[in-house]
Length: 166
Image (cartoon, rainbow, N blue to C red; front, side, top):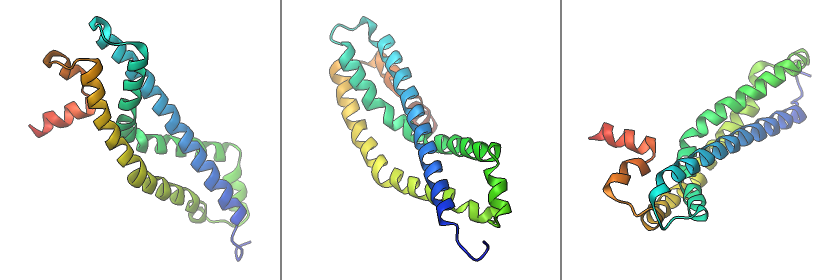
């Protein structure tokens, strides 16, 4: 089998890596969304003009920029999950016994990482930038952004970056 390219095996690995990384990212995104919603409920307790729907919408606008920073970790943990599953089911051993080198096995995960990175930079990043603008308008509208709430409404990443730049 050394002269043949194992296309079916590559497709299987590609699909498995892509699905696992995307599912891991969706879990992280959901976790960020829920935790941000709980934080917004805590912040808006004393305000009169907020309701649950507006807080859900605001949390929906705030989650993707934070999730964008968590995407590399989702890719890391998704890859670890796939490699752990492949080794537990002895699929890596079978592939090695069939004459596929470890470098050939790593081709599919590298292509998945490259494609997800390109999609992240070309599609996801502009979407999160647009959501950031909408988030600021929604915060001003529903939370009546004042000086005492400004520090609470900033995401932790923005706050740390601002402090480092000052």
